[in-house]
Each structure stands twice: as C-alpha cells, then as structure tokens.
Length: 185
Image 1: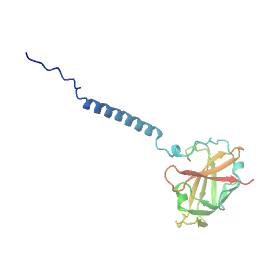
Image 2: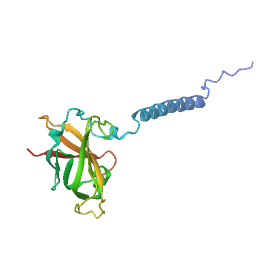
Image 3: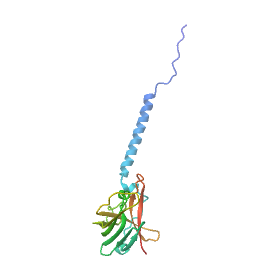
Image 4: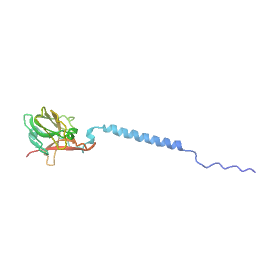
C-alpha cells in the first residue's frame, strides 16, 4: 500500500501582489499630495497670517496725518500726495538687512487688489531719494538710495484704519510678522 502525500497547505507566495498594492497606494497618495500643492499655488498669500478682512472704503482723509511705529518711525501723509518719512524700515526680506530710511516721498491710495498680499485697497509710498539713513543695532547693510513700500490696510476693533506691511525677520519660512503703523489721534 502506497501512502500518498497530502497537498501542501502553505499559502502561495503573495509578495508581488502586496508590493503592487503598496506601490499603487503610494502613487495615489503622491498624486493627491501634488494636486493639493498645485491648488495652493505656492502663493505667499497662503503662508501669511490668517486672512484680514479687506478694506475697500478707506478715503484720503483717513490717511492724511502722522502715522507712527516703533523706534522713532514716523510718516506724515499730506493731502497733496506728498509725505515725509522718518526712519522707516524695509519690508519683507529687506527688514532683515536692518537699514532705515528718511526723506521726502510721494504716496497714493490704490484700489489695485493685486498690489499687495491681501485683497482690497493698498497704499503705495515711494521714496525717490533718501536724505537720511540709519541702521538697527547689529546690522551693517548699506541702505538703498530709493525705495518703495506697499502698505496693506485693515481696521482695528474700533474700526480705525491701520497701515501695515509684512516683514521677514530672518527666522525661517512662514515666520512673517506685520509692521503696523497707527495714526496719531
């Protein structure tokens, strides 16, 4: 009598099937991640602080006057479009350079929503020739002879207008803060 062997109960190799499934899933997640990145567009607007309600109703009378910030910064906006700038820092990455500019300037209120980082009105300030320069402590970068700023507009809790621009203080991506000017009462 001959004994026959029972069929083997070891499972068939499923290695390639598992690997295919894992690779398919990784590909699907990769495509999804790329699609999400493409939708955000890498626009700086997406890296800024939470959205600020856009200002569309600012008028020249709200701008005219003296605006101040830290360390002696002052800007006097006049109704004729002229301005006097005192110790105003550079915006965005120029802030890290540490220079500060002073001199006569020109300004205008614009409705160009694409002018800055946020929607709504913006204020453009152009200093054609700096008459004075300074640096913050610990910086030695040469200041430019001319410069222009784009101020964003927002309203505080009392509905008073504030002017601000973003600055990068050099602490890494996404570490943007706002340089806020407030109007003298």
